[in-house]
Length: 220
Image 1 (spheres, rainbow, N blue to C red):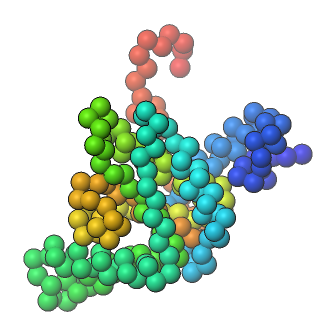
Image 2 (image 1 turned 90 degrees about the vertical axis):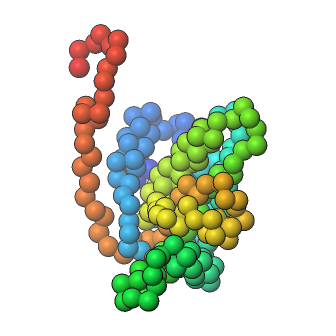
């Protein structure tokens, strides 16, 4: 009998999924959401091309206003990670008040190594719209939803993932390296790989502490 722990959603066709009970589908999706963690330590093993394309495809099914589909993806692996690291380091040097101290050298080296912390990363961006009737924040929200789809798909595929931004995501020179303009936004650097350590524990604050029920008559 198929159970949630053995049901790998991404490997089934739509027809096969429809034949699986709603209860098992809901249980598997809930376990995937609750089991996802930000994994900072990854091995050097790179995800397969098929895994990466599945992650990218899932991103494109995120909700978005007016069907604009505002996301752009940049898959960065191999030597390109070193190039990005140097661009990020140069951008940091330009922002620092001084660069000669030991502390400054350590910060610059740390910045340079960031893209090398995973065998693969995907920069997810949104270009500024020229349409007056489109709200910029709505496109950013849509791309953030796409990123969450990516993280959940990575979890379903047994991969480690990490959503990062930092000052580099907002730096003009880093944006330019990706061919983006200064008013475009890098919403995420999604690091992908295989976990090199245990999964961290996490117990979020209960939704009850964050929720107001308005006009809801049923007893809680």
